[in-house]
Image (cartoon, rainbow, N blue to C red; front, top):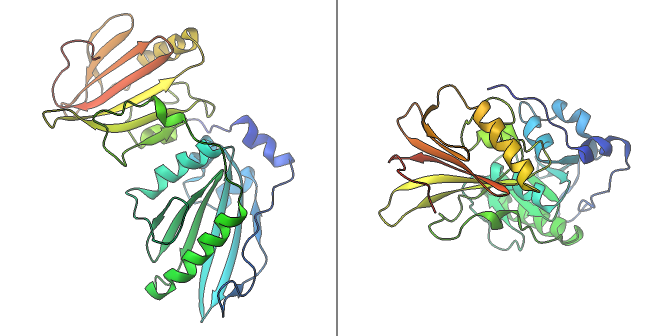
Length: 290
């Protein structure tokens, strides 16, 4: 699927604004470790030169700037990549999409996931990778200390409420994702070509996996909009742009049922100011779901 490159307004403006400095740990943060070379700084227009094939996702989610600082000790190198995002929700969105199944390291207060090769850290509006290119497990304490010191100098951010649109009952812990356009939506399901939910790198949708009482599962996508008119416009665009491999089985003005190439079912419906899409259902829904 091809989708347009989406730059949020704030990310584009950030090219002309001074970048807020990240206070990277100084030489000797752990005995024998020091900075290797100057800090590198990248604005949104330069991100394609740094991330091979993944810049679109960061830009869609609300990327502001990237700062990289490398460290050396004992003949090996560790690199810290600090991605500053528009807000805490954007940082959480990238974290959830990048970390996969969370495997947190003990001793780090901030949300994190990783192993001896790479540690992902979430702190306020920052998403941080700490890369241990050697993969040596004895360097985990060094990675953890970098994470702790970075967390201490980045101010705490606002609480993220964008996942609150997802029902709690039946939700599989750890399956939650935030979406902001076609690239993040692809991580969940291919509904069609382009920005079918009209998120535009401005609105957040949320998704998660669910199990019902019988053990049957499905994935739910919830996209809230600012008013009924915006939701209706997005729903019409979804129906118009629906992937041709999805066979529509029935439809009415505010919902339709479809089947995909794996013979799994889905249902999309507009409910006032939101769109709800359920996919990967083993049984065809016979009525509108509650």
